[in-house]
Image (cartoon, rainbow, N blue to C red; front, side):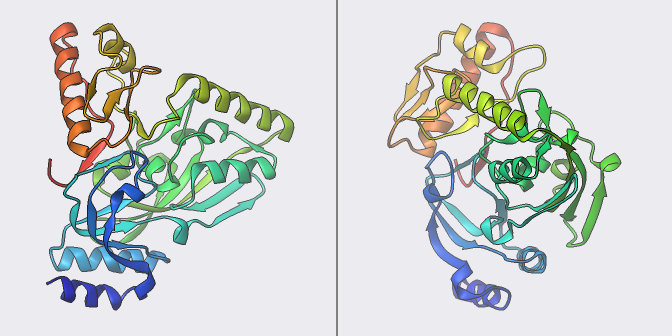
Length: 303
């Protein structure tokens, strides 16, 4: 079966962009995860579409991954095809106040390109450790800005394998959500409208936000960023802190002592450690405050 899947993938992609038994600890910001049976890297929209169609037609489990900044992969790995939208699909173009970028472009790189072009409005994303595709799907945001503020359209691959352009008025941006998330679309490209600004002011704002992140977030340890979604009317990190869980650990996973909204890999943490710690934290917070924390981190594989 493995051979037959490989040969079918080879009809779509060159051999150097099909990896087998690829350790996912190399592709997630948690630095955790077993091997992906197949890890493929499309270089065009057509290759991505054909790979998804193959998986759907052959009933092969598949999952789309970007920078792995919001992902916890099982210690047993993933049996199926992981489709990586990364540097092979990361082109960025600027035209006046419009930035068009492919889904694999890192937000930090787009922010720097905007700075070089004297464009303001994307500073909020300069420190988010993810790719554009994932950011569009979850309407990523930070420090008062979010993707929905700047997007004018994105191009998606639908569940049926159709390429569609979604204009701004159909995006339905919400808290960590969008029409792409709700419909299971794969975002391939996005168009953003920014504004002309003073490069010195843009750079100063990016540096200010970088310093805020460094001072408040546990960037010295691998993590997936905010572990839980913000409950309505509360802050997840404050609830976890008030529940007395700062520093709580399971194996190598720990509630960050610097920011309780983060679960970090202190060294040698397994996916099982992280999942168990997340379960414990959610259970204790609910017992103490009657608020159920929903994970922002996505789990992949068997737990």
